[in-house]
Image (cartoon, rainbow, N blue to C red; front, side, top):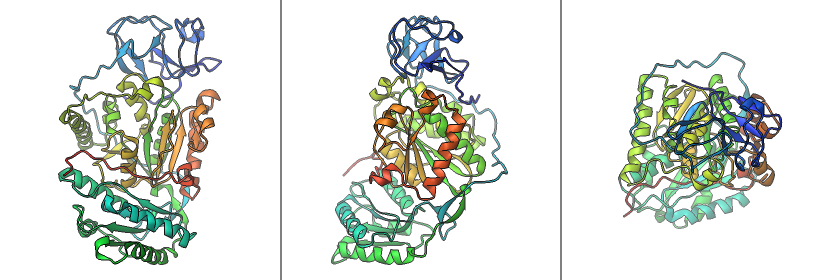
Amino acid sequence: MNKKLSIAHTNQSRKVIKVHNDDNVVVAIAPLTKGSLLDPCYGSVLLQEDIPAGHKISLNQLKAGDVIVKYGFAIGEVSCDISPGQHVHSHNLKTKLNGSETYQFKHENKFEPKQQEVPHFLGYLRKNGSVGIRNEVWVINTVGCVNQSAKRIIDICKHKFAGKADDFLAITHPYGCSQLGDDLSNTKNLLSSLIQHSNAGGVLVIGLGCENNQLTQLIADITGLDESRVYYFNSQEVDNEIESGVECIELLLKEMQQDTRSKQSVTKLTLGMKCGGSDGFSGLSANSIVGRITDKLTRYGGRVILTETPEMFGAEQVLMDRSATKNIFNQIVKLVSDFKQYFINNNQPIYENPSPGNKSGGLTTLEEKSLGAIQKGGQAIINQVIDYGEKASQSAGLTLLQAPGNDAVSSTALTAAGAHIILFTTGRGTPLGFPVPTIKISSNSNIAKRKPHWIDFNAGKILDENMDIDQCADELFEYILKVASGEKTNNEIHDNREIAIWKKGVTL
């Protein structure tokens, strides 16, 4: 059963929050001291100990074997008796996940975008009908051996051709040689998708010449490539690769000079959803708002991509219940099962999550973390499941993407899948950014105030200013349209733009 997140209760001083009416815990919005009395709406519970912000408090008498409910779902099993007003965390709560979950297909979900007045933004219409929100020059290398060449070319072009493109970016990585099998295929597929990204008005691909990831084959495998916008060469085959690179970019800029922003429907927009450095508030504020954005954009006919497969563990049935068809359900089952097998093949525990930072912020079990993480997908119908490195289709709706939870790897995969913008929610903060605009959304106001050069939007005002979730989501949506129309995010302003490729195989 789908349960839309809504803040069920908060006390008058905004010190605790009950996420769902079925929950048997509340979350402390601020640090609370032993002896404090919760609001009578929670049964006049007296705190038995100090409670850190973001952490859970029991509302009921619970015995070992009972379940803790948050978001309206079980997030784990009580490991020892708990009294009302006690802190609920790793010392008395454990996961119920054991790797032997079974899944059930319930029914198909028909998705039809609502017919309504659709918002617009100013974007760049490409020859193939796609739309970019930036008109940049990207230099992408086939192999790590030419990373520094790519960077030198970009450094020269930033000065020599200043103002002739929205930006110049070297997308470097350490792979492309001494890779085998799926590892090499993953690198090729991801780079191929990046080469075709609509935020790049011109792309220069640089190879070395002797690497496994052969340049000519990489280019040949791209269907419908616009060769007026993609130049390429092997460094071993030119006299001076730096000069050759600058000359290629000068030619690309001549093609790009005709590009101008024009009014585009949000049906052309693709957003990637990501959380990193999550805390106990992430699922309540930032992820909840992002879920509203998912619902809003997909209703208009736009696209949203959700990833971090391990952070679906424990909440996967909730996603499966939103499958458009039985076939999509089966694909989600395979997505989750294959990733669990990946853990097993590497002799790792499947549920080695949350991280120390997550636990410090109040998250206890993977079920709790996952239920909070999937809030980013809202209530949207899932109509596509894609592999790592693959591009999402242009059809409206929610897509699930195979990728790990690692911030850099999963966000790179979102970019390659076609996300114009990444909505990155965080409780603890990070400066990390990616080739596309990365909107950092804080779950709490403290990190937004401390790190204004990291955080673009503060969702913490839901908690400390009693702001309506839908009103906050509307503000975020307006900001997204501004970014799509050219306003720069912090990661762009501070040049925090990089990629990471999923490495999971043998290196020669």
